[in-house]
Image 1 (tube, rainbow, N blue to C red):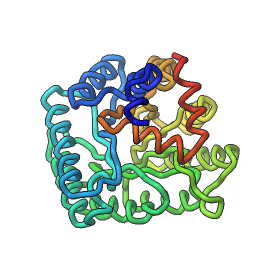
Image 2 (cartoon, rainbow, N blue to C red; image 1 turned 135 degrees about the vertical axis):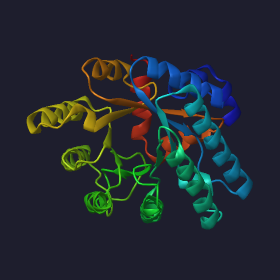
Image 3 (cartoon, one colour; image 1 turned 30 degrees about the vertical axis):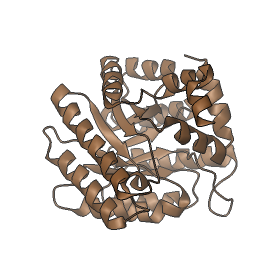
Image 4 (cartoon, rainbow, N blue to C red; image 1 turned 180 degrees about the vertical axis):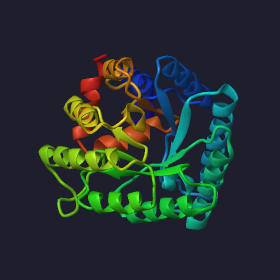
Length: 294
């Protein structure tokens, strides 16, 4: 199935639209183009749940390569990673060693860079938040590592307030995993309402956060709220996925809002995409709607 999918016309079209390519150079080339269009970037080497230490170290090595290239080419970009891609399921100490090394490197760069630790399924939520808090407390790491909160999780507000107390930067998204109703909101209206509530908390916190959404109504609410509350446009950023709502991305940049594009790359694009589609059927419609639009 993977071989057919990767070689098929539709598979190649999907991968070229939503994934920068399979190599580091592909991601860097896409990053330069996005920067040229006025937006910043977060680069993600696709992959998760590695099964051995060698894979984890290889993944970390690619991120070190990315950080070096970002500095050398003076790109406006940071990196995003998943803890299971760094070996969390294999050896937690190994994952801690690898991610600590990346955050330390990002913090020592001139200018300083940033590592976003992505959120995964609910089985990893607390471990991920604890991991980020520990990294952020290390001397020199402040403002160089951040977390992701998924608005469909019922615990999201509590998690946000805890992270804010530690001064940790947050990327707020709706959530892409299939989670049960006892821990996650199921209705779109409930998720949207919680997103807007949390968004306003973040925007007024005085900490630089990312609002990750392609929902134009929510984006408009954020713009209105920022204007009404006197929140500077450079005190937060909108974030969107590579290849999705490119028209809206360009529009926000033209209007003077900060925009960051999340650029995934790597050979693991097919299993990554299939897992997302299998876990949450709504993702199929999301991909389909955006495949043929600008």
